[in-house]
Image 1 (cartoon, protein in one colour):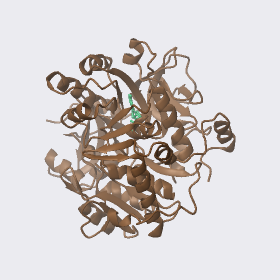
Image 2: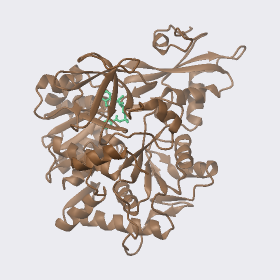
Image 3: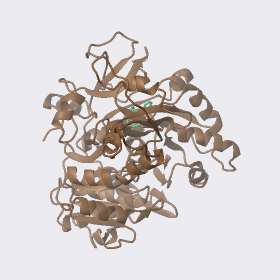
Image 4: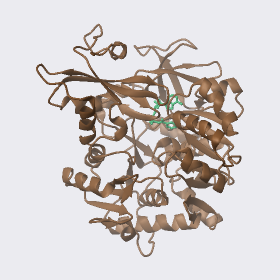
Length: 532
Ligand code: OOB
């Protein structure tokens, strides 16, 4: 299967973007050149490149010994621990395709990933952040009997320990994956009922990682703090942990992105670089004024995942004593960065420009007509690391991509004369809750299953801290007693959705405003006065 039309693939190879190198080779290369160099710090565990490389080999051998085969899928749900990387690289090395779930995902999401991906295994921690992932796994096994096995990092309970998975001795992989093949499946923030899976190849992903590392000036002296969930595209690849490994630097893992967790790590490990979502970055700026920690090693703070206001951007550098970079990216591909050489105004007021000279950018009106320079419109993009289609979703792809293969990002942007993009809004039916993406329809579908609910519509409401929160507007069935908002929120949670998808607010109304053609007008809904 080819992911890009041959004409484009040939072009990207000829330009030197796609090098035919598998993603995990970066570990092997440093392990050979400088085996004792530290790759990874997780608490008081420090793994060298040689250690990480050896562990990845043992996992790859173990996976194949258990009967997994190149091309099989495995759902990987691990927090920011060293094992995340051991398993990620081990899976890649065996050609087994991880589905990159987030620790916040719950029964509904994980079951769906396992089912839809036809996963052979699910990998979870024993417990994380007060939640028992083995219980989650039990629910998932009940819902998806075809799921072969559950592998647990830590105390396995009734399941198999990852310790058992590691082979005693590494054997060479007989049938290693090719770089133009599927490396892993990322998750889409989504705007429709169910999350989409994003097929990323070694070739395309490595290009974005390598080039990101160059743009952000990474080198062997880089110490990257991974504070956001490691599986997310931003901390994984922009340039993130993989960019740091590629450059031969060191990754430090934070259990969560709070200043309380991160500041002592920055001081102790002399962290030079990290990436945050806007609300967390602004909370760090506030906390820094009070904190006794020495943050002077921090050189660059990247902020992305949601829009950073110019006022917010202005505060960050002085408060944290570092440079700031805006990052506007998406798991589907395209990533934009402000550059070190950009003037201050550009860094504060734009979301950056694309990684690649071959990232094609179109800004169009509602009818796909290109708009004049400087106009605000829908962002479409195509390029050497932007997917041409979601995994096994032909119907959705017909809408999400143009006939020419441009991805419809759902973002509304404007381009400055220097080629920098300014995110002005969003056309997709999604709530961006401080960087966490909520597909309105996914939550609406759950609410519609409630016996008292006739219709539901979920929209974003502005929020001083998160940027946006979610509000569910609900029309009750005739004669139904009005449930309490807390009960409806609990209903969504019990349906097995991640916590961040539970509506922050519930409002009861008797009708939804309509657009000209009779669809719910979410724009007008946001301005609706709810019933007392
Ligand atoms: C990143 O990836 P996703 O897949 O979670 O979300 C992508 C969407 C974008 O389409 C856009 O709507 C929004 O998140 N977004 C931003 C933004 N960065 C992302 N909106 C405004 N300003 C920004 N700086 O969020 C992601 C992936 C790689 C690197 C960075 C972020």
